[in-house]
Amino acid sequence: MLPNPKCNKIILQLNDMLESGNVNQIELRKIKKNLLDLRSTDPVNAHVVLGIISCLEHNIAEMRKNHELAIKFQNDSHTVGNYSVSLSKYGLYLESAKYSLIAFEKDKKDLQHFRYVRDQFFYSGQFSSCLIFLKKYKPLYINDPGEYQQITVNEQIIDLILRFLHTHNISEQDVINAISASLEITQKKSLLLVDPNISLMSFSDEEWLDISFVIRLRNDSSSVLEELDARFDSFNPIIKEFISIDFEIENGPVSKIITKIDENHFKESQFDESQFSDLDKNMISRISNALDLKK
Image (cartoon, rainbow, N blue to C red; front, top):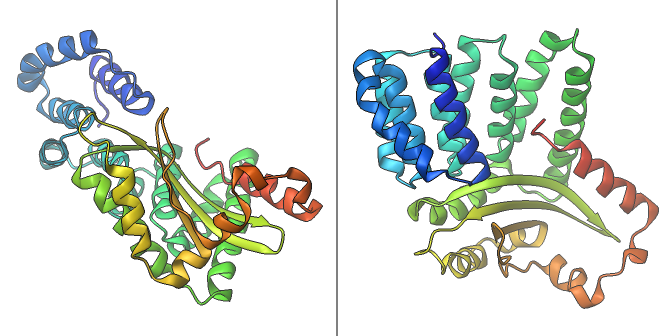
């Protein structure tokens, strides 16, 4: 059951704040003030709203508590889907994938649920699961040429990534573990993530999987980049050879993570676009455009 128009407007407003990072404190105070009435008239959406507010306020425990209470009251695509969104904002992609799939199975007609399952499988490193999901449900969009073509492109890109991993004897579980281990640090600090991206990159005769996240920093978390660098340094050398995991602060500095490829080719003083072959340029352009999963 969808929320009434008033609740839906509040939820959309909060999710917009969550996505943009522009938290309107005046509006937030108004919403909190109205929650007492909402709890008595619509407890389901009161807890959905409280879950999103807790997400905005960097409180993972309260976010979980409220979304799970909403699901306990009403287990449908709306409550489960909103929980999935909040989980993803903390980089809890494995868990978010599970809930987004449940939401999709409850309402297969909702394109947003389909896209969210795809994104969460992908950003968690579950490439095979993502590919299976796309192939299984692609026929649903045969009458939507744009979406159907986008799914086809996503399939091609994921196939390229899987072949790359196989070539270098890297398992999907290695990728999943590397992403999860890195994000444990941001999750412990209750830091929100925006604009995740995974791309297969090529430069000269080198190829690597580039994984990047943007962190929405809190005032008490200025040391997070150093901690992330240290965690990456502890990874298996094979992972560091062919996978680059980068973090940057939203509107701030980039982490100092350096892989062998980065060190050899991507120092700013050495960067020269003329060094790219035509094939490299085409591949980078094709992958960066095709893998824009957020339509």
